[in-house]
View 1: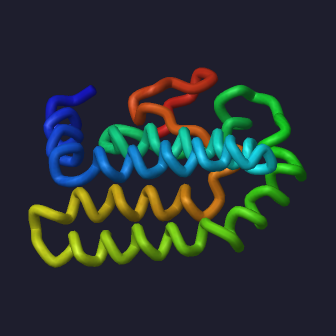
View 2 (view 1 turned 180 degrees about the vertical axis):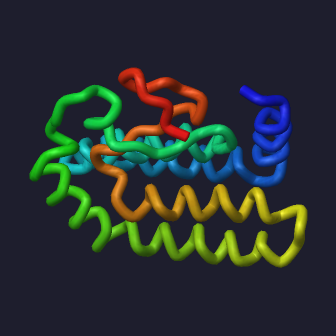
Length: 144
């Protein structure tokens, strides 16, 4: 991890990222308790990990990482994402976009706003997605 990403991640945690990550983890625990929400719980934990340490990370399809389709990247994942979008995703994304707009007001807040937009993007359709380091070499291909 680059030193700048490390410093930005520390600032992110201090300035509220820790509460964001804890919130996503609590949402995941609530999903597990409901039994029917277990597929979405995994997505909450993936987003929670990203919410704790977002700088230097990117969101990709699990199919891209593993090279094969699984339940979350296939038709059931698509249906799960539609249900997630209707009941939770759009509202969570609106919250992250609002936070991003608030951060864009200051120059110092711009990197944090970009991370909120990244979280808004995964909050819309998290099933079948995973988070990897930007520097990772996936299946022999550089991502960026």
